[in-house]
Every structure is written in structure tokens, then in C-alpha cells.
Length: 90
Image 1 (cartoon, rainbow, N blue to C red):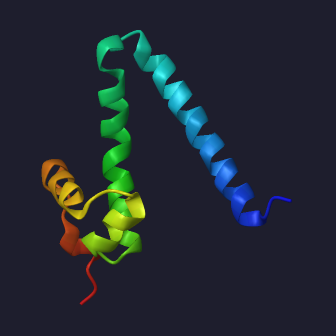
Image 2: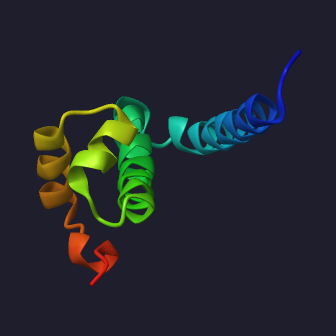
């Protein structure tokens, strides 16, 4: 028997998969050789920002939530120009 949390997660995953398919369809013709990079750029920054918001700007916890190393997260934050201070509680 599927519980509510699993059902919501499955529904959200299906919605995201649909968005990616629609996005991919429109870009595939235009940017065939850069599709992965383009989709990653669109998804990565908001995903990292959401993790930082959920963890009040704690990079260690955000990295653990995302399933990546803290140093990797720090490098991505720097590369993407994310301002971590805006999620830190005073």
C-alpha cells in the first residue's frame, strides 16, 4: 500500500518529468548538442536555492539534503553566484 508521502513524491516526479520532456522537445531542435547543459543550468540553481532555504543557509545540511559533498555545493554556489546570506537566520 502506497502512503500519502510516496504518492505526493511520485506525483511531483511525474510533473517534473513532464516539464523536462516539454522543455527538451522545444530545445532539442535548436540546441541538440547542448541540451543536457541547458537543462542542468535551468534546474540546478533553483534546486540549490531551495535546499539552502530549507536548511536556513546551512551548506552542510543543504549538501546532505542534495546528496552531494559540501565542497561540491560550495563550488556550485560560487559558480552560480548564489548569495547564501539571504537564507541565514540572524
